[in-house]
Length: 495
Ligand SMILES: [Zn+2]
Image 1: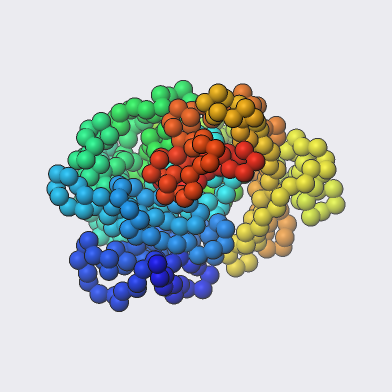
Image 2: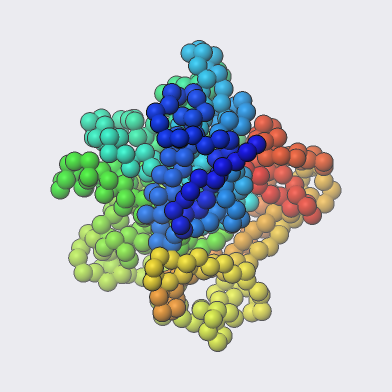
C-alpha cells in the first residue's frame, strides 16, 4: 500500500497515514478523504495536547520509527496500537444500516494515540502482567481523549451549557466513543454494553477494589477485573478532579477559558506524574499520590484537596499531608515529610545527589537504595526536557520470573518480565532535582502466577506453540499477549 508522509513540524513525532493524501477541503463522512483528514487532525491534536502538558517533549515514538496509521484495517468495532502502527476498524451498525468507522471518532483516535504517548514515557508498562498497570494504560488513553476533546472551544461552551459536570450528570465530555458504543449495543445487545449512548463514561461512581478480586467478566454496569472495565475507576477519579478544578475556576471565570485552565491543570498533573513515576508498575493510588506531590511542589498545592476528594470518592484515600506541610490550603507551609506509598515515593532531597550514578559511588548507592547487589548494571534511558530544563533519566533493572500453570501447556512455563528502578530528573546544571524509586525485590512467582492466571481466564494469552503471526490476527483472536522467543510473555497490542 503506498504511503505518503505528511509534513510535521520539526521535533514532532512522525506518523504516516497509509493510502493517498487528499487536498484539504470539506468531505462527506464515510469517504476516505474525510477519514484521512479526521485522522490527521485528531492525531495532531492529541500530540499537541500532550506536548503542552509534559515538561519533556517527545520527538519520537517508542521504537523510534514513524507510526503507521491504517484508517480501514478491516471489520470490527475497535482499534489498536501495537508499537508500530495505529489501526482502525469499521463495521455496519445492524440497526441503523450505517457503517461506523473507528477512525472517524476523535475519542477513539486520541485514545489510541494516548497508548502510544504513554508508551514513550513509561515503556516498562507495555509488557507488565499487572492488571492494574494494564488498566492504567486504558485510563490514560481515555484521559487523553477527554483532554483532547476539551481543547475545542465549542465543546467547552457546550460542556458549560450542559452544566460542566455539576450534579453528576453524564455529558458530551464524559461520554466516550458514542458512535462506536451505539453500534456495539445495536450489534451485540445489552449484554455487551448496558448503555447505548457511549462506550465508556468518565462520569461514574466505581470504587477501587483490588482488580484480582473482581470477576473476569461482568455487565458494563459493574466493575470487572478486565483492563477496560477497571480503567473506569481511575478515569472516573480524574474526571472528578477536572470537575472540582472547574468549580474552583468558575468562581473567577465562568466562561470557557476557565474550562480550558481546569483542563490544562488536570492534564499537567497527570502528565508530570507519568513523567516522574518510577519504572515498573502503575498503581492508581501511587499515581494519585504522585499527582499530589507534583501539585505541592509545582502548582502551589491548589489542586491537592481536589485530588484527595476525587480519589477518595473512588475508594482511594491518600495519606494525609502533614498539616504544616500542606501547601494550598494554608499559605507558606513547608513541605512535610511523606511516608506514603512505598513504591513511587520521593527520595529525600539531601540524599538525591548521593544517588546520582554519574557521581563517584552514586551507582552503588542507587543499587543500595533499590535493594540490589552493589554491582548490578542498570539500563539507562534519557529523555531531554524542554529548552534549558534538564533531562529525565530512567535506570531500570529487569528480571524474569518463571510462571508455571497447566493451562499454559508448557512444562517449562513462561517467563514474565518485571522491572524495578529509578526515575530521576536533572536540572539544567546536571544536578539531580527529583528521584522516585520502585525498589527490588520483585514480586514472587506466586504473585505473578495469580496475574497470569487472570489473563488466562480472560483468554488473553495466545498459548499456541506456532503462535499467531500478525498483530491483526492476535487482535481478531482477542489475545493481547503471546509467548515470544525464549518463552517470554510479551504484549502484542493495546486496543
Ligand atoms: Zn485502549
